[in-house]
Amino acid sequence: MDSSEYIKKRIQSLKQDSEEIRNISPVTNDFDSWSVLKLILHSAAVNMYTKVLYNNDFDDLYYIDALAGSGISTYNSGESCFLGSPVIAAKVAQEPFKKMYLIENDDDKADALKARMEYIFSTHDDAEKPEELVIKRGDANQKIPEVVSDIWQNSEGQFNYYCFIDNQELNVRWDAIEELTPKPWGDLLINLPIASAIGRNATTTPVPEKLNKFYCCDLNEQNLPNSDIRPVMRGLYEDCLAQRNRAVQRTVNVDANVGSYEYDLVYATRDISGGNGYIKVIDHVKEFIEDVDAGDIDNIHSVLYDDQSSLEQYLPAGNIDDEIVAEDNTDTDDNQSSLGEFCD
Ligand SMILES: C[S@@+](CC[C@H](N)C(=O)[O-])C[C@H]1O[C@@H](n2cnc3c(N)ncnc32)[C@H](O)[C@@H]1O
Image: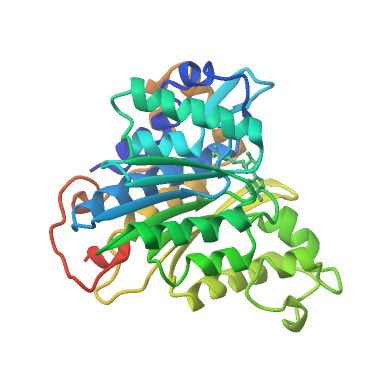
Protein backbone atom coordinates (compact mmCIF):
# COMPACT_ATOMS: atom_id res chain seq x y z
CA MET A 1 0.00 0.00 0.00
CA ASP A 2 1.09 3.51 -0.76
CA SER A 3 2.39 4.93 2.53
CA SER A 4 0.84 8.35 1.96
CA GLU A 5 -2.54 6.64 1.56
CA TYR A 6 -2.03 4.73 4.80
CA ILE A 7 -1.01 7.81 6.77
CA LYS A 8 -3.85 9.82 5.25
CA LYS A 9 -6.29 7.23 6.58
CA ARG A 10 -4.70 7.49 10.00
CA ILE A 11 -5.00 11.28 10.02
CA GLN A 12 -8.62 11.12 8.94
CA SER A 13 -9.33 8.62 11.71
CA LEU A 14 -8.59 11.31 14.29
CA LYS A 15 -11.40 13.58 13.18
CA GLN A 16 -14.11 11.36 11.77
CA ASP A 17 -17.41 12.00 13.62
CA SER A 18 -15.54 14.02 16.25
CA GLU A 19 -18.13 16.85 16.46
CA GLU A 20 -20.96 14.36 16.93
CA ILE A 21 -19.04 12.44 19.62
CA ARG A 22 -18.02 15.67 21.32
CA ASN A 23 -21.69 16.61 21.75
CA ILE A 24 -22.31 13.69 24.09
CA SER A 25 -20.73 15.62 26.98
CA PRO A 26 -19.45 19.13 27.69
CA VAL A 27 -16.30 17.65 29.28
CA THR A 28 -13.18 17.48 27.11
CA ASN A 29 -9.40 17.43 27.41
CA ASP A 30 -7.15 20.21 26.18
CA PHE A 31 -4.96 19.57 23.22
CA ASP A 32 -2.08 21.35 21.64
CA SER A 33 -1.70 21.24 17.90
CA TRP A 34 1.36 18.95 18.05
CA SER A 35 -0.65 16.26 19.88
CA VAL A 36 -2.10 15.29 16.53
CA LEU A 37 1.20 13.53 15.78
CA LYS A 38 1.06 11.15 18.73
CA LEU A 39 -2.47 10.19 17.78
CA ILE A 40 -1.40 9.39 14.22
CA LEU A 41 1.14 6.91 15.60
CA HIS A 42 -1.42 5.48 18.04
CA SER A 43 -3.93 5.03 15.23
CA ALA A 44 -1.38 3.19 13.08
CA ALA A 45 -0.21 1.05 15.98
CA VAL A 46 -3.71 -0.11 17.00
CA ASN A 47 -4.69 -0.70 13.40
CA MET A 48 -1.69 -2.98 12.77
CA TYR A 49 -1.72 -4.60 16.16
CA THR A 50 -5.31 -5.83 15.88
CA LYS A 51 -4.76 -7.10 12.36
CA VAL A 52 -1.53 -8.97 12.94
CA LEU A 53 -2.39 -10.56 16.26
CA TYR A 54 -5.90 -11.54 15.29
CA ASN A 55 -4.56 -13.26 12.19
CA ASN A 56 -2.28 -15.26 14.41
CA ASP A 57 -5.05 -16.84 16.42
CA PHE A 58 -4.73 -15.07 19.71
CA ASP A 59 -7.63 -16.01 21.92
CA ASP A 60 -7.77 -12.69 23.71
CA LEU A 61 -6.46 -9.25 22.87
CA TYR A 62 -6.69 -6.50 25.46
CA TYR A 63 -6.53 -2.74 25.15
CA ILE A 64 -5.22 -0.70 28.07
CA ASP A 65 -5.30 3.12 28.03
CA ALA A 66 -3.54 4.15 31.23
CA LEU A 67 -4.27 7.89 30.97
CA ALA A 68 -7.42 7.69 28.94
CA GLY A 69 -8.91 11.21 29.05
CA SER A 70 -12.52 12.13 28.21
CA GLY A 71 -12.74 10.75 24.67
CA ILE A 72 -12.44 14.17 23.03
CA SER A 73 -9.68 16.78 23.03
CA THR A 74 -10.22 20.36 21.97
CA TYR A 75 -7.77 23.01 20.86
CA ASN A 76 -7.87 26.47 19.38
CA SER A 77 -9.92 27.77 22.35
CA GLY A 78 -12.37 24.92 21.98
CA GLU A 79 -13.18 25.68 18.36
CA SER A 80 -11.72 22.46 17.03
CA CYS A 81 -11.59 18.93 18.33
CA PHE A 82 -10.09 15.50 17.83
CA LEU A 83 -11.13 12.08 18.98
CA GLY A 84 -9.43 10.83 22.13
CA SER A 85 -7.15 7.81 22.12
CA PRO A 86 -9.72 5.22 23.36
CA VAL A 87 -12.29 6.31 20.77
CA ILE A 88 -9.67 6.13 18.02
CA ALA A 89 -8.66 2.66 19.23
CA ALA A 90 -12.24 1.40 19.00
CA LYS A 91 -12.73 2.93 15.55
CA VAL A 92 -9.48 1.84 13.91
CA ALA A 93 -9.23 -1.66 15.43
CA GLN A 94 -9.58 -4.26 12.70
CA GLU A 95 -10.96 -6.81 15.14
CA PRO A 96 -12.56 -6.24 18.54
CA PHE A 97 -10.58 -6.39 21.76
CA LYS A 98 -11.82 -8.81 24.38
CA LYS A 99 -11.71 -6.05 26.96
CA MET A 100 -10.84 -2.38 26.84
CA TYR A 101 -9.52 -1.03 30.15
CA LEU A 102 -9.67 2.75 30.27
CA ILE A 103 -8.05 4.34 33.34
CA GLU A 104 -8.80 7.95 34.25
CA ASN A 105 -8.43 9.66 37.63
CA ASP A 106 -10.71 12.63 36.97
CA ASP A 107 -14.32 11.61 37.63
CA ASP A 108 -15.86 14.09 35.21
CA LYS A 109 -13.58 12.94 32.42
CA ALA A 110 -14.23 9.29 33.28
CA ASP A 111 -18.00 9.93 33.11
CA ALA A 112 -17.65 11.71 29.76
CA LEU A 113 -15.48 8.90 28.40
CA LYS A 114 -17.95 6.24 29.51
CA ALA A 115 -20.84 8.09 27.85
CA ARG A 116 -18.88 8.58 24.63
CA MET A 117 -17.69 4.98 24.41
CA GLU A 118 -21.18 3.62 25.07
CA TYR A 119 -22.53 5.99 22.44
CA ILE A 120 -20.11 4.93 19.71
CA PHE A 121 -20.62 1.24 20.44
CA SER A 122 -24.38 1.59 20.16
CA THR A 123 -24.52 3.90 17.15
CA HIS A 124 -21.33 3.56 15.08
CA ASP A 125 -20.82 0.45 13.00
CA ASP A 126 -17.16 1.24 12.49
CA ALA A 127 -16.46 0.98 16.23
CA GLU A 128 -15.33 -2.52 17.25
CA LYS A 129 -17.25 -3.29 20.43
CA PRO A 130 -15.23 -5.28 22.98
CA GLU A 131 -16.80 -8.07 25.00
CA GLU A 132 -16.41 -5.76 27.95
CA LEU A 133 -15.67 -2.08 28.43
CA VAL A 134 -14.03 -1.35 31.79
CA ILE A 135 -13.72 2.27 32.93
CA LYS A 136 -11.34 2.31 35.88
CA ARG A 137 -11.46 5.46 37.99
CA GLY A 138 -8.34 6.32 39.91
CA ASP A 139 -4.58 6.56 39.75
CA ALA A 140 -3.07 4.53 36.92
CA ASN A 141 -0.23 3.50 39.21
CA GLN A 142 -2.72 1.64 41.39
CA LYS A 143 -5.07 0.57 38.61
CA ILE A 144 -2.50 -1.01 36.25
CA PRO A 145 -1.74 -3.86 38.71
CA GLU A 146 -5.50 -4.48 39.02
CA VAL A 147 -5.82 -4.63 35.24
CA VAL A 148 -2.92 -7.08 34.95
CA SER A 149 -4.39 -9.35 37.58
CA ASP A 150 -7.79 -9.21 35.85
CA ILE A 151 -6.18 -10.18 32.54
CA TRP A 152 -4.42 -13.19 34.10
CA GLN A 153 -7.65 -14.30 35.77
CA ASN A 154 -9.76 -13.99 32.64
CA SER A 155 -7.55 -15.52 30.01
CA GLU A 156 -6.59 -18.97 29.01
CA GLY A 157 -4.35 -19.85 26.10
CA GLN A 158 -2.64 -17.11 24.15
CA PHE A 159 -3.34 -13.52 24.97
CA ASN A 160 -1.66 -10.20 24.46
CA TYR A 161 -2.21 -6.51 25.15
CA TYR A 162 -1.66 -3.13 23.53
CA CYS A 163 -1.12 -0.40 26.13
CA PHE A 164 -1.00 3.35 25.49
CA ILE A 165 0.54 5.47 28.25
CA ASP A 166 0.12 9.11 27.28
CA ASN A 167 2.23 10.78 29.99
CA GLN A 168 2.10 14.56 30.14
CA GLU A 169 4.05 14.73 33.35
CA LEU A 170 5.76 11.93 35.27
CA ASN A 171 2.40 10.18 35.52
CA VAL A 172 3.02 6.44 35.29
CA ARG A 173 5.90 5.27 37.46
CA TRP A 174 8.29 2.47 36.68
CA ASP A 175 6.80 0.08 39.25
CA ALA A 176 3.56 0.13 37.25
CA ILE A 177 5.45 -0.64 34.01
CA GLU A 178 7.06 -3.56 35.82
CA GLU A 179 3.59 -4.98 36.46
CA LEU A 180 3.02 -4.98 32.71
CA THR A 181 6.36 -6.56 31.82
CA PRO A 182 7.87 -8.92 30.96
CA LYS A 183 4.59 -10.83 31.24
CA PRO A 184 1.83 -10.63 30.30
CA TRP A 185 3.17 -10.18 26.79
CA GLY A 186 2.10 -7.07 25.02
CA ASP A 187 3.19 -3.92 23.23
CA LEU A 188 3.58 -0.50 24.79
CA LEU A 189 3.29 2.96 23.28
CA ILE A 190 4.65 5.40 25.84
CA ASN A 191 4.69 9.18 25.65
CA LEU A 192 7.98 10.24 27.24
CA PRO A 193 7.92 13.94 28.22
CA ILE A 194 11.62 14.19 27.50
CA ALA A 195 11.92 17.97 27.59
CA SER A 196 9.49 19.25 30.19
CA ALA A 197 9.05 16.78 33.03
CA ILE A 198 12.20 14.73 32.43
CA GLY A 199 14.80 17.17 31.05
CA ARG A 200 13.77 19.94 33.44
CA ASN A 201 14.30 17.75 36.53
CA ALA A 202 17.20 15.52 35.52
CA THR A 203 19.95 18.09 36.07
CA THR A 204 18.86 18.75 39.67
CA THR A 205 21.01 17.18 42.43
CA PRO A 206 19.76 14.99 43.93
CA VAL A 207 17.33 13.96 41.22
CA PRO A 208 13.76 14.54 42.46
CA GLU A 209 12.11 11.40 43.85
CA LYS A 210 9.28 11.66 41.35
CA LEU A 211 11.68 11.46 38.41
CA ASN A 212 13.65 8.66 40.04
CA LYS A 213 10.47 6.63 40.36
CA PHE A 214 9.80 7.09 36.65
CA TYR A 215 12.93 5.03 35.85
CA CYS A 216 14.03 1.49 36.67
CA CYS A 217 17.32 2.60 38.21
CA ASP A 218 18.57 5.13 40.74
CA LEU A 219 19.34 8.16 38.58
CA ASN A 220 21.62 9.57 41.28
CA GLU A 221 24.05 6.76 40.49
CA GLN A 222 24.03 7.33 36.75
CA ASN A 223 26.54 10.18 36.47
CA LEU A 224 24.12 12.28 34.45
CA PRO A 225 25.63 15.13 32.40
CA ASN A 226 24.70 18.77 33.04
CA SER A 227 23.95 19.51 29.42
CA ASP A 228 22.44 17.68 26.47
CA ILE A 229 20.57 15.54 28.95
CA ARG A 230 17.65 14.52 26.74
CA PRO A 231 19.39 11.78 24.67
CA VAL A 232 20.82 10.30 27.87
CA MET A 233 17.41 10.16 29.56
CA ARG A 234 15.82 8.73 26.43
CA GLY A 235 18.50 6.01 26.27
CA LEU A 236 18.07 5.14 29.94
CA TYR A 237 14.32 4.70 29.55
CA GLU A 238 14.83 2.52 26.47
CA ASP A 239 17.32 0.42 28.47
CA CYS A 240 14.78 0.00 31.26
CA LEU A 241 12.23 -1.33 28.75
CA ALA A 242 14.79 -3.60 27.10
CA GLN A 243 15.58 -5.14 30.49
CA ARG A 244 11.90 -6.06 30.80
CA ASN A 245 11.90 -7.94 27.50
CA ARG A 246 10.76 -5.06 25.33
CA ALA A 247 13.98 -4.78 23.39
CA VAL A 248 12.54 -3.89 20.01
CA GLN A 249 11.84 -0.19 20.11
CA ARG A 250 11.10 2.68 17.82
CA THR A 251 11.39 6.07 19.41
CA VAL A 252 9.66 8.84 17.50
CA ASN A 253 10.77 12.32 18.41
CA VAL A 254 8.25 15.18 18.21
CA ASP A 255 10.09 18.49 18.38
CA ALA A 256 8.35 21.80 17.81
CA ASN A 257 11.68 23.62 18.02
CA VAL A 258 10.34 25.91 20.70
CA GLY A 259 12.58 25.27 23.69
CA SER A 260 10.96 22.85 26.07
CA TYR A 261 8.26 21.57 23.72
CA GLU A 262 9.52 18.15 22.77
CA TYR A 263 8.32 14.68 23.50
CA ASP A 264 9.23 11.15 22.49
CA LEU A 265 6.91 8.32 21.65
CA VAL A 266 8.46 4.97 22.45
CA TYR A 267 6.93 1.93 20.80
CA ALA A 268 8.26 -1.15 22.52
CA THR A 269 7.74 -4.80 21.70
CA ARG A 270 9.55 -8.06 22.20
CA ASP A 271 12.63 -9.26 20.40
CA ILE A 272 12.06 -12.42 18.42
CA SER A 273 14.02 -14.51 16.02
CA GLY A 274 13.23 -13.78 12.41
CA GLY A 275 12.97 -10.02 12.74
CA ASN A 276 10.07 -7.63 13.05
CA GLY A 277 8.47 -6.83 9.73
CA TYR A 278 5.60 -5.27 11.61
CA ILE A 279 7.82 -2.56 13.03
CA LYS A 280 8.43 -1.32 9.48
CA VAL A 281 5.02 0.33 9.51
CA ILE A 282 6.04 2.24 12.62
CA ASP A 283 9.18 3.27 10.72
CA HIS A 284 7.09 4.80 7.93
CA VAL A 285 4.93 6.73 10.38
CA LYS A 286 8.04 7.79 12.32
CA GLU A 287 9.59 9.18 9.16
CA PHE A 288 6.47 11.20 8.44
CA ILE A 289 6.13 12.50 12.02
CA GLU A 290 9.77 13.51 12.36
CA ASP A 291 9.64 15.42 9.06
CA VAL A 292 6.71 17.59 10.13
CA ASP A 293 7.63 21.16 11.01
CA ALA A 294 5.67 24.03 12.55
CA GLY A 295 4.26 25.22 9.23
CA ASP A 296 3.13 21.71 8.33
CA ILE A 297 1.35 21.26 11.63
CA ASP A 298 -0.81 24.33 11.09
CA ASN A 299 -1.51 23.27 7.55
CA ILE A 300 -2.40 19.72 8.54
CA HIS A 301 -4.93 21.12 11.00
CA SER A 302 -6.44 23.51 8.53
CA VAL A 303 -6.73 20.97 5.74
CA LEU A 304 -8.39 18.54 8.12
CA TYR A 305 -11.04 21.15 8.71
CA ASP A 306 -11.44 22.62 5.27
CA ASP A 307 -10.23 20.57 2.41
CA GLN A 308 -8.87 17.13 2.97
CA SER A 309 -7.93 16.70 -0.67
CA SER A 310 -4.95 19.00 -0.20
CA LEU A 311 -3.55 16.76 2.53
CA GLU A 312 -1.45 14.98 -0.10
CA GLN A 313 1.34 17.52 -0.04
CA TYR A 314 2.29 16.67 3.55
CA LEU A 315 2.42 12.95 3.07
CA PRO A 316 5.49 10.80 2.39
CA ALA A 317 6.28 8.91 -0.80
CA GLY A 318 6.99 5.17 -0.81
CA ASN A 319 5.20 2.01 0.09
CA ILE A 320 4.22 0.13 3.20
CA ASP A 321 4.49 -3.64 3.02
CA ASP A 322 1.09 -4.96 1.95
CA GLU A 323 1.65 -8.14 3.95
CA ILE A 324 1.47 -6.06 7.08
CA VAL A 325 -1.27 -3.57 6.40
CA ALA A 326 -3.43 -5.26 3.82
CA GLU A 327 -3.04 -9.01 3.70
CA ASP A 328 -3.45 -11.81 6.17
CA ASN A 329 -0.35 -13.17 7.78
CA THR A 330 -1.18 -16.74 8.62
CA ASP A 331 2.09 -18.04 10.08
CA THR A 332 1.55 -19.21 13.61
CA ASP A 333 3.70 -20.68 16.31
CA ASP A 334 2.35 -21.80 19.64
CA ASN A 335 5.36 -20.44 21.47
CA GLN A 336 4.92 -16.98 20.07
CA SER A 337 3.06 -14.42 22.04
CA SER A 338 4.22 -10.98 21.07
CA LEU A 339 3.36 -8.92 18.07
CA GLY A 340 6.80 -8.70 16.52
CA GLU A 341 6.97 -12.46 16.36
CA PHE A 342 4.47 -12.73 13.57
CA CYS A 343 6.16 -10.57 11.02
CA ASP A 344 8.94 -11.92 8.90
C1 LIG B 1 -3.02 13.71 28.00
S1 LIG B 1 -4.50 13.32 28.73
C2 LIG B 1 -4.94 11.87 27.87
C3 LIG B 1 -5.34 12.07 26.51
C4 LIG B 1 -5.70 10.78 25.83
N1 LIG B 1 -4.59 9.84 25.81
C5 LIG B 1 -6.10 11.11 24.44
O1 LIG B 1 -5.27 11.08 23.54
O2 LIG B 1 -7.27 11.39 24.26
C6 LIG B 1 -4.07 12.62 30.26
C7 LIG B 1 -5.26 12.19 31.09
O3 LIG B 1 -4.77 11.41 32.16
C8 LIG B 1 -5.43 11.79 33.36
N2 LIG B 1 -4.46 11.50 34.43
C9 LIG B 1 -3.39 12.21 34.81
N3 LIG B 1 -2.69 11.55 35.75
C10 LIG B 1 -3.35 10.38 35.98
C11 LIG B 1 -3.10 9.26 36.82
N4 LIG B 1 -2.05 9.21 37.62
N5 LIG B 1 -3.95 8.23 36.75
C12 LIG B 1 -5.03 8.24 35.92
N6 LIG B 1 -5.30 9.28 35.10
C13 LIG B 1 -4.47 10.34 35.12
C14 LIG B 1 -5.78 13.24 33.20
O4 LIG B 1 -6.94 13.58 33.94
C15 LIG B 1 -6.02 13.35 31.69
O5 LIG B 1 -7.37 13.20 31.36
